[in-house]
Length: 220
View 1 (cartoon, rainbow, N blue to C red):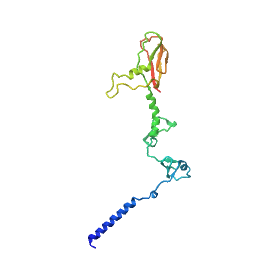
View 2 (view 1 turned 120 degrees about the vertical axis):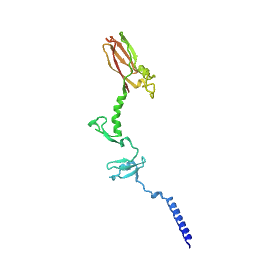
View 3 (view 1 turned 180 degrees about the horizontal axis):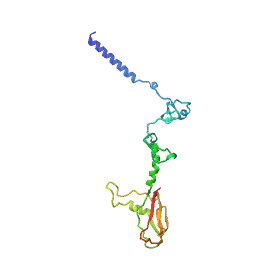
């Protein structure tokens, strides 16, 4: 056998081996694959003294669990807010001993700051309203809600170029109405309905032609 014939024979042998390898890889038996033990939630919780780090597949929710040494922990990579740590722990609500002194996760930070920002964003003053107090009257009325919508929802006289020309407003039943101060020498018998209709009496005239009623709106 000459050199050329030897090389041809070697080449055919290599091709035959590669073909055999491809055939073997394409016919892997599913039973030979490694897998985790599986169990229902009840079966998982009934395991006696599982080893720390032990894993199994929960057939009830289709999720892998691992044992932490004290309980079974759901293994996820969904990065819930409670799983994401802050770079620097900080006491956002100054809760002190009654709550975690420092918030350490995104979830704790949200829970601490939400009540603060919510309270601040819910309270606002309606637009100024001129009231004629030049003479005494009884059962006079001003619809505080209508005054608010007329000024806030209509086109503003001046606003920055990127802003809409009207301010977003709430419905009448989305607000609570408060009078925080009035001059008792000028006004009396002030009441406000749930719809924002204020009724009042004028019992005297202000000495300097000026008097104040402080009205506050609070989002329910």
